[in-house]
Length: 260
Ligand SMILES: NS(=O)(=O)c1ccc(O)c(NC(=O)NCCc2ccccn2)c1
Ligand SMILES: [Zn+2]
Image (cartoon, rainbow, N blue to C red):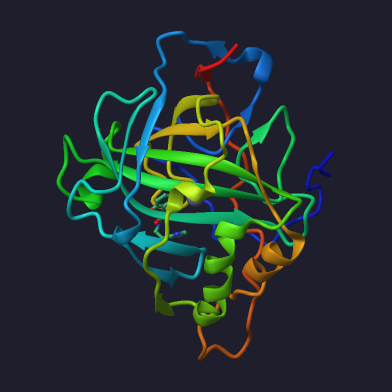
């Protein structure tokens, strides 16, 4: 079982005192026995076009693999979603060791890392920036990473990471099929109404948390930890690790499951 991080972790950024609304914050611990099966949840429809992949950017908090979201080429619909959503980027959160690193947990079980595939509602809005402040604006698919066999599809991304070691660095990265990072079975998931897990923490996200994890090797995750929070000019370099938010109160929300 992952150790609950009792030690004081270096906070990646200072949590604000008050958050607008603040009653649907993310991440959360998903208590499986309290989740409610919803037979009306439909299968997810994921259609990603590898040619819309553009670059990797170290933004000083994580590394983002960014997609061209000016047209409806890489889309997500179905599941709990009423509208069509466009993939704009994916990124990860991870720990300094394999005992913790994920943002969500399942019955308090933490994983060493968590993938977030970020989509915005292109039926209702025309830009991510517009959608990010609306309560039905975003849909994020979360996939847990577990240490095990090497993930062949991830290796192309891992090989590109040294080029974005420092904050604010960017490298061209094309023809990457984000679907290869999804577990084989995407029909089993939990879903709940939440927020961004980093500032601006807006309560705009329909979370879709996959029940099945993917496996990556110890060495692949070690390359994530070789990235830096700091830019090349800074005197003191700080390893990009523990870039996850602490878990937030569920506050009466219901977590639905697509499976019994
Ligand atoms: N982690 S998450 O909830 O999936 C998510 C998805 C899309 C996002 O734009 C963000 N947040 C985001 O980009 N914030 C601006 C950059 C920033 C500011 C402070 C800390 C981390 N990142 C978080
Ligand atoms: Zn995230």
